[in-house]
Image (tube, rainbow over all chains, first blue to last red; front, side, top):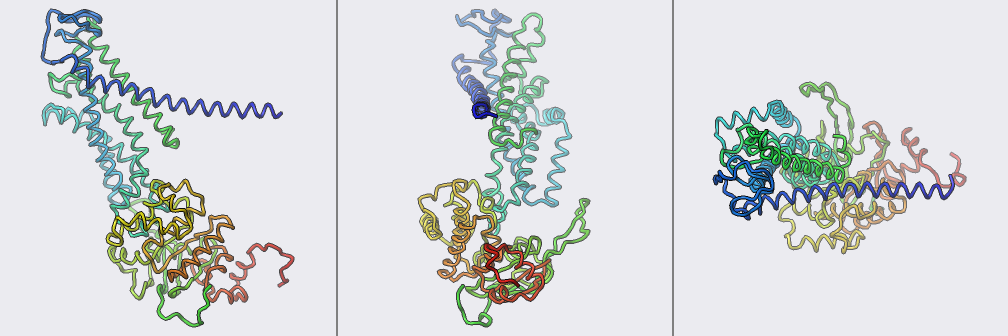
Length: 297
Length: 279
């Protein structure tokens, strides 16, 4: 191989590496912008539109996107079966979805990480007991659990958060446990042990920091799953109570008008798909960035 | 290293008697015990105050297991480990914690034995965080910097993370951490094996200086005879979990009696073989 050819090959490799890096960066930045837009929209739009979920405007019901409505505003996404602006309704729905997603992640994450730490750190029968509970949990369909809980506790945002937390803590527990098992026999953990560190110190100060990157990755992916699950529950009518707009319940409300007013179901559906897709891509990109070993998982 | 009069030290810091450590083999079903691997079968030795005792032997001879048993990372199956006259094999966690203040360990791999997510300062301060009341929090930074300076590190780097240091510097951090609680005994488990030869010499000299300054005792474990020769007062040669020979460094190196010791000495690579006298 001539020097020039070798230099060319080296330059190609470098270019490829740089392109790969830029790819990861783009895959992080673009979904982050999309999620940020949803967050900003969910906070601001309902306020700007003075959105009232119980308000009806029967003269302007089922209007297609772009119609000018009563108060002179343009309903860019059309209106629904009671004459409400779809755009405002969707953003209000996104507000509910994002809140449910964030709170669920918080509860499921804290609980799951705690279980994972205990399980991985102590091992033995504690590990066995906790992981069998996790297995049972995984085997139980969360929709079924949700319907059960909704019928027992009644509908409400708190109950959805409880149900979804119960359904998603297992992922956190497993990831944390496997990470702790990998770290547990590292010398620096032994070093902390020889200092005389107790279990709490070992779990939270020595091992937990090493688990944070994979937990962050899982949290991002789970965020999308939780939002989707919330929409599914609301679609089935066991999610948010009537009167609270949610992407899932908007989709459900539109199914009766699919042939005449396609936008009522379709637009919230697309909005949901984009949000879930963005968090999924973000999770994948973060995993490539933080923890290339997990890539095939 | 230090020329003390011959004869047993007044009262040993560490006295290990008939130590036996066996790792259980458990079946995957119900974790039943189906057998055991004996790592250390019957080992007895003392470490006097200010003394360095070397443990040599090839891989798998039980050196590291002895270290881990002494520091309490693995449980002794039989025998006793006395630290300043108290048998610590029967101690509970709280009593062990008190003993661990006086007994520290430097590990083999300086890349693995430092927590990658703690700065050097926090790494050293972890000792005081674990042993409350040793040092008020306000003094942690100053004391950590002093320790860094003592082991030959620039104290301005106290906010850096382990990956920003070289192997030798990392091992110095480990030594600073081991010193933080002013222990009486430091166990060095292959503490210089992962380092370059030139860095090895620097770290060994540092350990010798610290011994003179703080009156430390070392239990020094290595497979490298030249390292042991450099630092130890007495040597124990281990083979398959048993002590095959014990004695002063000079004596063992000049006149090895056990066949295994001779084989071990013969395996040391020689820099200028033509200068060696034929044996």
